[in-house]
Amino acid sequence: MIRFDKVDKRYGDTDVVSDFSLEIKKGEFFVLIGPSGSGKTTTLKMINKLIPISDGTLTIEDKKISEYDIQELRWNIGYVLQQIALFPNMTVEENIVIVPEMLKWSKADMKNRVTELLESVGMDPDKYRSRQISELSGGEQQRIGVLRALAADPDIILMDEPFSALDPITRNHLQEDVVQLQRKLKKTVVFVTHDMQEAINLGDRICVMNKGKIEQVGTAKEILNSPSNDFVKEFLQTGLPHYQEEKTVQHLLDHNYYSADEAVFTATIDAKASLNDLILLLAEHPSVQVTGTHQNERVINREHLVHYMASDIRNDKEVQV
Image (cartoon, rainbow, N blue to C red):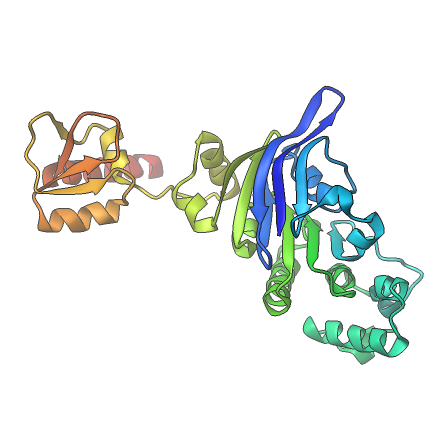
């Protein structure tokens, strides 16, 4: 639905986003994550033309973004900011219906939409619709910000670190609300965060960015189990204190737990296979040949596995001491 094809964004001679290519699927909850200055917010803002692209092609539903009327485009894209930006002199209902009012919805339709949206996040319409924004807690205000973005039933919702200023409990509740709403309404959500745990909790897929470029795109499981490079590994370790990369057969090769040359084997396994897969295979076979490497023949037997696991245990004990 949203496709970036070699998109660049430059300010003078500085590349903020470069050679950015990916496709966000219709109805997908897609997360952009990376450290400060990685280009994730710039990427988000290019989708609704708040920031123009410098080069490349950006399309929505196979139509170039340059061909859209800017007002029409933005009416079909909800936008939620960290700062919320609700109008303090308006009631909850008046804040929610800003875009439907511009689109000339009837009063009855707007009232029904406010009722539907407030009920969807567990806020009693009779209690909240006439309240002033100043009477709401931070979490309630952010909920109204999300509902305002959904009010005109747009196809796309952009969310730029919307929960980062909230306390952890409120933040978790809002994450649950947003996920439930997205699954119910089937909207395409593009969500920016610097918090890896939040990305894992929310995203169908995650794009890890650094210095304006894509480092890895995949599901949370794919990224956690197979980080593409040292940057992604370090980012995971920094953002998830208890993160441990899934051990693979390659770990044994890297630590020289193998035989080479004319070693005998009775089964094969890929170097990217998990350590658990290797254990199961060696329970049935005394030795296995490792495939999927550019090295000469490598064979792992039960003795190699036992010594590797013993070394791992000793290292853990040293760290604990």
